[in-house]
Length: 338
Image (cartoon, rainbow, N blue to C red; front, side, top):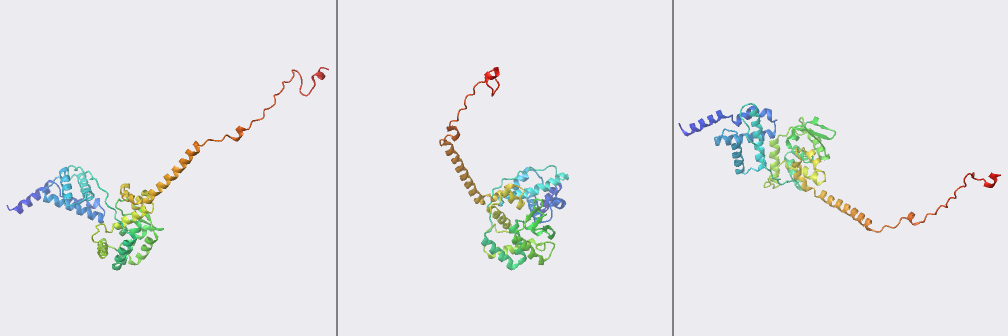
């Protein structure tokens, strides 16, 4: 038997021992993930892990596999946040397989600690350059950029928006990453972008735009403006820009969290360092409190003058003479005897 036959035989044996991830994906992806970019990313993660298991002749879903995957991903330069996303997709698929009786047990999955990455956002000048370059090649794409930067919406959320989801200058996103809908008030520029998008047709303002075409046009504008070496200059930077501007404007983090649809406040805290004006207000408030406190202390230490009412001697009332026993008031006792 030649080498290729041996390898093929071993691959068949592995498939018999445990179902391949590619097969599990075909069976369960439809019930676990909705169509969209997130599902496409998860599919790429699953097939990447499936290929790793075949190359390393691994067919057991256990803690050893997780450790080997983490070591492999770090070896190819993946950050902890990327590794967490890959393992999260794997765990979700394996959890479904366990419930279906296809695997015996789940491996242990503990999220790796993620460091706060640098938050990159557009300046007003960079925004003008990028939007103008995008608009030269496709005006519809430029309208999408304006809408994204003023709503903080993800690209997929904006593409899925329907005309019926817009009421009273408020847009409601039903298809979100968290699975929870949210409503966002529209700025004048975002509302104008929606109106200008009507002539392009479709069930929604941006429903006729395909994400690959939009990303291709964005990357072309990125190259034309010499941002090719900036790894953060991707469409998602528009969402970061929206969040950064809200925080810089003094909007509290809880409202920013709700506006962007962050599942946890920790995701919003990445922008907290931008709220420098709020810290200045804290110093002003403390100065005012210190002045009030100092005034109270000074007032308490000063000698208090006596109260005017207490310095004046009150006139004494004349003593009342005791009445004679048996006498009636207003009558002379002698006349009473007569």
